[in-house]
Image (cartoon, rainbow, N blue to C red; front, side):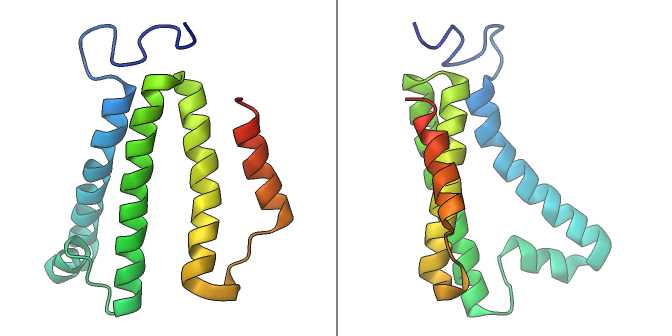
Amino acid sequence: GRGGGGRGGSRGGGAGPPSLYVIRSPIVYFANVALVALQDGRQAAADVLLLRTGSATATRLAITRSLLNTLKQIILSVAFVFLTYADAFTVFKGVGTLSTVLVARRLLGSGEALSRRELACGLLILAGIT
């Protein structure tokens, strides 16, 4: 097959790369909260934990980014079923790059532009695996 073996999980019975990738997100989130607590105190850590940014716009953008990243992780998990690890991550990064720029352009207006060079690179990444 195209996947080479070990696509759905690990060979040794532990967590495979897809599981580790999904588990990493909350670990990094709480590690960030802990670092803020050590550096800036308890109140600042509570603000980070609860996404209190001091700006309604910044909070909406942070939540939008989180939801889009969750959607990309779900797509990545599905891609692992049909593609090799390398191809799945390539699609994930290519789609992630293009969607980030397009969403930023939509949310931030003309201040964020998608250059022809960026578009070409994203399309080449996706075309390279087909």
